[in-house]
Image 1: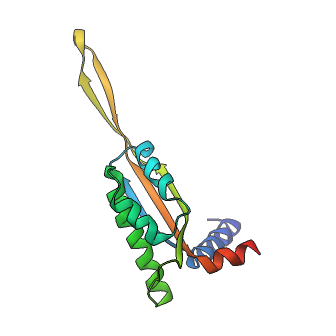
Image 2 (image 1 turned 30 degrees about the vertical axis):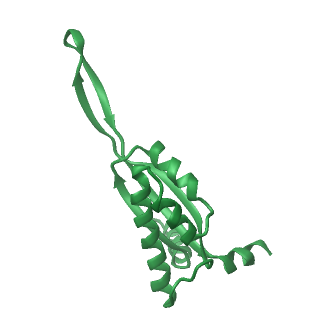
Image 3 (image 1 turned 120 degrees about the vertical axis):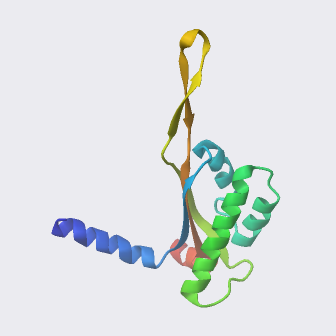
Length: 137
């Protein structure tokens, strides 16, 4: 690794230390279905988002609820205090495509249709409302 690349990697790692996030890799749900649920809670207050996810009928919402709880716990562990209602919000959430399992399904006249079983990676960042106000000023 070159010196310039190493410096930028170290700078990125330092920036990550001040962010509070949780990551979920290889979820066997299509990214499109996961994005529908992620869009519901984007920018929402963390505990309100937990309520929305708990009562959502989508299968992906249970996985995102667990991920959000993990991100809140990461914030609590780094700051050494308990999260209070109204303090945390979801600053960023994104869903990326992951590996695809490719399968063949028998089709008429000796053909085979390709089945793509998609999966995704979800990254969720939480932040405090006070730092949101600091960034705007």
